[in-house]
Length: 237
Image 1 (cartoon, rainbow, N blue to C red):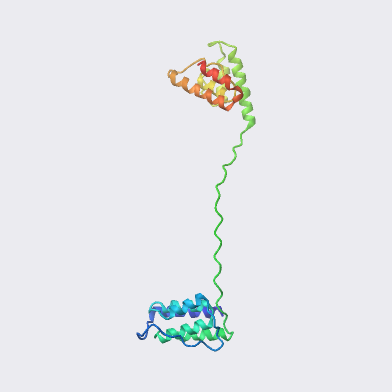
Image 2 (cartoon, rainbow, N blue to C red):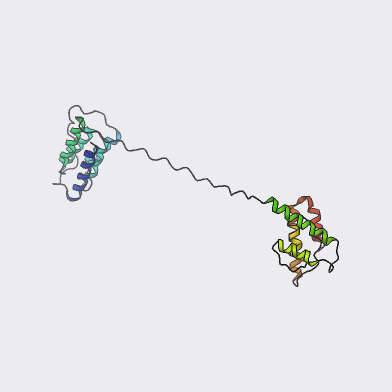
C-alpha cells in the first residue's frame, strides 16, 4: 500500500506543473463535515495543514495535498480535498479516495518520518606519535665519544693521530679531515661527554666559537648532571 501513497503524491505533484485553479473565488471557506467516524481531535500539525488548505494559491495546492497525505489522518485528507475542491483546484477526488481507503483499512497510513541521524562524534586531536630512540646507537656513540675525548686529553695539539679523529668523524657523518675542530668537539658533547678544547678553528673563528659555545650550553641542559663541566668548557673557549 505504500506504493499507493507514493504514486498518489507523485501524480499530484506532476499535475501541479500543468494545472491551475479553474476559477477565482473567495479563499476563506468553511470546511465540510468529515466522514462519519473520523476523529474529533487534531494535532497542531494537522490543524496547520487544514489552515494552509483554506489559503492555498495556484502553485501551493499540490504541496498542501502532499502534507495532508503525510499526516496519515483520513479526516485531514478528506477535509483538505473538500477545501481545495471548493476553491476550484482539480483532482482533489484522488485525495478523498485515498482517505476512504485508509479509513477502510485498505491502505496503510504513511509511516512517520524517521528520526534524524545522530550527530557524528567530534574528532579529537590525536597525540603525536611517541619518538622511540635507539638506545643502543646512543650508547655506542657515547662510548666512541668518551674514547676520543680521553685520547685527545692526553696529547698536545699537532701530536694527535689524525687517523683516530678521522675514524670518529666518519662514523658520525662529519667531514673526515682528521682535524679536531669545533664541529667534532660539538659532536662529542652531544653524547654527554665534556669535550677537550678544539685544536683547530676555521677562518671564520668568531662564528665558529659562538656556535660551539651554543652547542655546549645545549649539552648542559640535555645532561644536567654534567652541566658544570659543559659550562666550564664554554668559558674556556
